[in-house]
Image 1 (cartoon, rainbow, N blue to C red):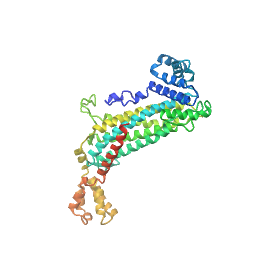
Image 2: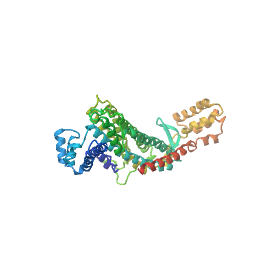
Image 3: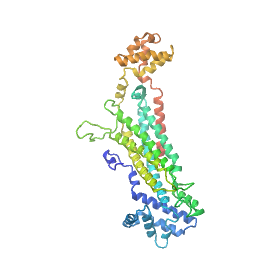
Image 4: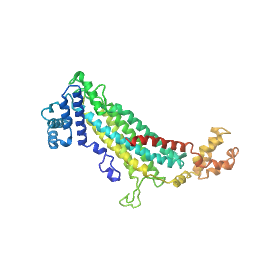
Length: 453
């Protein structure tokens, strides 16, 4: 995910990139080393004084970065130089107890899940902010008639607030998914080299549970380094969230086209859309969302591939998960920050919506006419009659209303005044207004819970 993306569209970076900086990951690994030491001290495996010394020393800011970097350059190992430096800073008396009974992936995977939990907290807050803005938008557009479109064509009338209610409904389920996945996802792992507890024996599960408790995590039932379904699930969930956001971005992008003109994303004063066409007011935020959402979705196959770990462990798949997680999380942060910006500043043009609604000269009301007419000769016969007028209107450029009024099969059952009344699209929006207001209420309730966290 491009590091220039946030500044290019003047949207604040939500902070996910900082979480995935190497230094933050290292500190998370050190935090796991502290939890390991404290859990072992509670069980009498290492001295309590050693655990306290390790906890005091496990601050990356107090370590020799040059020494760590030189160690990585020399060893090419993921964590050993960091463990060496923690042991050195802890001191001769207690440094030998650092990393007792653990293997690299025990620490790095558990630590990276600490980082991921931080990212999830940001995501939930951002979704809360999006939902809060959507609530206002749904209410504002609850009674605002717009053409409902299926297969790219006018279908039946709807309201803009109903569109927003659809978005709200999907986002609320994504919140549920993220929250429901948390107990499966945020779990400590301490099975040792091959996940067998050989290094700690009967105390192994107790130590792992202690680490989980100290970190606010659960504990793996089988601490195998080959288990990755929970990591894959996370990427799949982020892919689903990205798909919803991409759909919303694409919808606004489309409705913002000159030919539609029904909405417009925020275009701050001074924004330049083109180096050569001064008039351009481009959907930059929507384009960012659509592009980033495609990238996040593309990471789902990579995560599923990473689940196919060989034997008891394979660094290959760990590297794949690391890449997929970081890129997906950074992408989701960018997407949600932009979606919130759009929802808070989206301009609506009800006059243009109404003008577009009338483009078909009443054809969008064919279903309403058919159902009213069908009360007498039956639905299928009414469908055939209205179909004839609708096709003639579309192909010959004639007035749909005039064709209906001239058809004796229609006027035998309804007066011209009744036909004219049935062709009013604002009277055929079903329960759109109700669903929009209900969606707004549900969005506000969820937002109140998410934003405070």
